[in-house]
Image 1 (cartoon, helix red, strand yellow):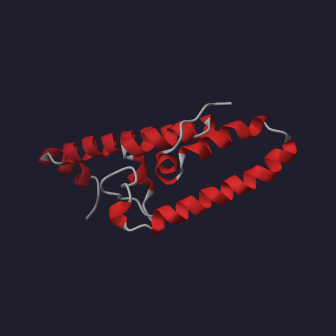
Image 2 (cartoon, helix red, strand yellow):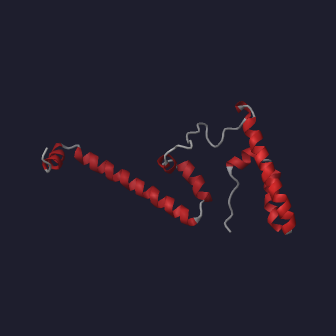
Image 3 (cartoon, helix red, strand yellow):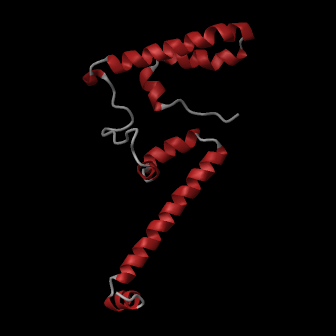
Length: 136
């Protein structure tokens, strides 16, 4: 199993002992795991709610000084942000990491083709050759 770093979100919203308890939980007897795991999740939820109920001036800014993603953000905004992608790819399974990498590379190639295409169209001879093929 791949080792994953603790997320920035967890570092900001949870006390450190929660990570320790979650790390040792798989080594406990099944009945103990069954009892403690919902309690840990409930405590995590409570800590998260407390974090966001504090006045904004007391909260640490989450990840960036200027949050810019919303639930309606286009996928392009995520794929084009290197900082976001580096964090997300850390937590992705290999197959999803490959899909996102291919999609990102496709978008870069598409942008490159558009730049070259429109740069070439800006010369009058090329514009006339493209438009000359159409009956307008």
